Image (cartoon, rainbow, N blue to C red; front, side, top):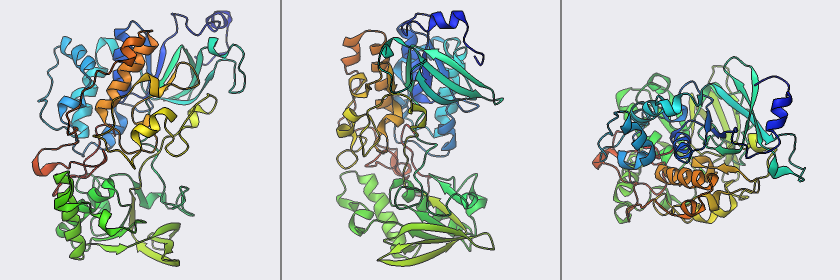
Length: 459
């Protein structure tokens, strides 16, 4: 709707709980679609707003990456029941999907069901949310006003819908941390964007030509960086002239490669041992500690990355740069709503101590739901990977439990909302099949041997 309000609109705005108003879900990834299924099970009407041209846009971007979790923990059981009523067959629950497998074999069929397809709006980018007629400051009657969700569609037309509640499941994949050491983009980083890739590039697949025979700088010391480094090491053996510079801020080399054979997670330890062995053979030019301050584009189109190294300015020359320094939530669409977020993690405040990466891995975060995700703005919930803010400990199965609990809460079934229905194995579900997967401390670890970096079950 992109017209001025008429009398029927104004009547609808009188009460936020009008049965004619849907629950707006932002994001058609695994958790967003699961939330829609759970809402339908409670008799609530969802409308799903997805910025991409397909469901699972982010998942497809890391489609080359094998997942930590097997199929049995990568699907929502209520969504599976809906699919099976349509004749869908669940993949082998013990098998491990790639991101593309998850999108094509689970999300696409789910989006095509009669229950979802008519409630899904693709190429609809949400630009802002408010209480209809009320800005952030106004309190009187606030809870009685519906949400107004503004969007821009694929043709560039601006529109809006009114909703009784909003579930933000838009994730963090599109908001990577910048290269700049202080959390801001380095000076010149935006201008050098064509030579910088964030996250986990498909080094051995569709992006191979971008890196083959080039000098590549990898920034970061976490699992995404490790996966890229291992893939690049394979590429150097395949294509002469490929070279790798590895820069990071970490000063503790003992932690850099993990616990090795003493690691309580053996596959993670094996990855650390492999990375250490490659580093010791000189596979990487290591520059550390290194804190990026500025990025210059050279006359020949290359990069000159400037930063602090032991108190002195140091320059690194490269053809391409991979920034693997984590993700953060884009909170801009929530600017006119009242939210209470942890000041460090940018996640719901009550959730922060449960997911703090200094204390938890994806296997030790306990299930949680509406109570921990509630915001001062009644009817607003942030779920999925975005609920974890800057913490890398998200697990897809936990996101499904969030969706179930929040849907129950919005339906008024508070007993079901409080109930914990997710039971994880004692060892967690961050295990992978043999040599092809990494059992990781965080949910975004790399794959072992020559396989591509392993993604979380959520990314």
